[in-house]
Length: 445
Ligand SMILES: Cc1cc2nc3c(=O)[nH]c(=O)nc-3n(C[C@H](O)[C@H](O)[C@H](O)COP(=O)(O)OP(=O)(O)OC[C@H]3O[C@@H](n4cnc5c(N)ncnc54)[C@H](O)[C@@H]3O)c2cc1C
Ligand code: SF4
Image (cartoon, rainbow, N blue to C red):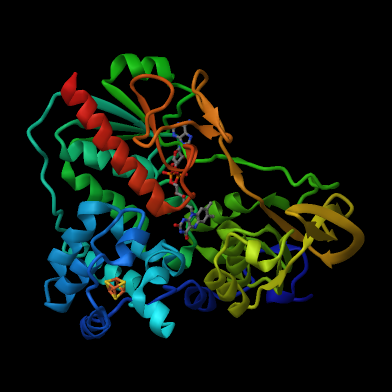
């Protein structure tokens, strides 16, 4: 009987615990102090720095790099947290190659940017590992705000409200807070229980209560929250998943990539997590890459990402695509699923080649079959369970620039709200900015 990565079907224990520990180690080793000093020295401390403009939370990057360079990592961390209280997580998960580091003048000049993400991690880790919380609350206002969803947007909003002296109660449907930081981000980007530790650290500001296993729509209504609190912030993310619309989608072995990743993130022993021998991931974003790479790291023999358009249209960055390729994931472009074959359980995926003309995608009729005992759908998340009465826009809760929804007293931000680009850092920025608007509204009233 074949063992390990060659075992047929969906099996656990494809790799030894040692191999798994090695595979799921930190994607980028943290900087040692002398490495951080060398990296900081490369910064030109630009006036009107383009890296700041490219950061959704507008961190003063040259300032914090200067603070590292002058051996003040605590001050550097404070500079980061002033703008982005989840700066520790963002240092690990931001696609810096398409944000600050892409904008860095040294990237344009030499093709090698200042390593802003790793420097940010150096600063934030230095302060967080000493268990220091750099903020204090303003005088208490007596105002109470309900925050629905304990992901990056909700946490950032609650923290900023607490800083302004308001009390925030976060209602979270899941057992643990953190949102996709806890249940979605690839395991090798946030090792050592960092997501949980970051929430504990953030709560040290005081004034924030998290009630887990409390879901809006189940035991909570928007009307009741509006009546009981001075304001409500909705940050419920995107809980639904698009359908594949391929014949045989209901066969066993076909599942949502996000659920697989959530199971992986919550597994205490990765050797117990089953994965296919031949895995096909349908999609072209970060979720597709994360599901594919982590399947490979769990010991799947063949892993393919099948994407319906060309490489340049993939929302996963070139860096993420290269990461997948470097782990042995095959990328197929211009193919769309038409059927999953198998007698009850998936055995093969049939893909049709596509062509694009004036942006419109059409199937060519030519198909190819890939062996697939496990098929992951990573074709985008959708808003699930938004309370009635709110105006929607593009399938999300419509908000203005300050995060105000169509209902008075209700704000929204993060992935569930219109605009934005479904990144952790953007969710943090929106949560923070909505908190500022809630604060000024409450102080006027
Ligand atoms: C697999 C995957 C990998 C990703 N990787 C990256 C990455 O590497 N880098 C990056 O920048 N971005 C990444 N993203 C995107 C990023 O995780 C999200 O943009 C970000 O988490 C959005 O934050 P949020 O607070 O809006 O929503 P979420 O993080 O989704 O949090 C929403 C919270 O609301 C809760 N909730 C939902 N419904 C209810 C309800 N009815 N009542 C109460 N609570 C509710 C949920 O349980 C959840 O805790 C990834 C996303 C996925 C899916
Ligand atoms: S653009 Fe690059 S060199 Fe200029 S301040 Fe930002 S990190 Fe430094």
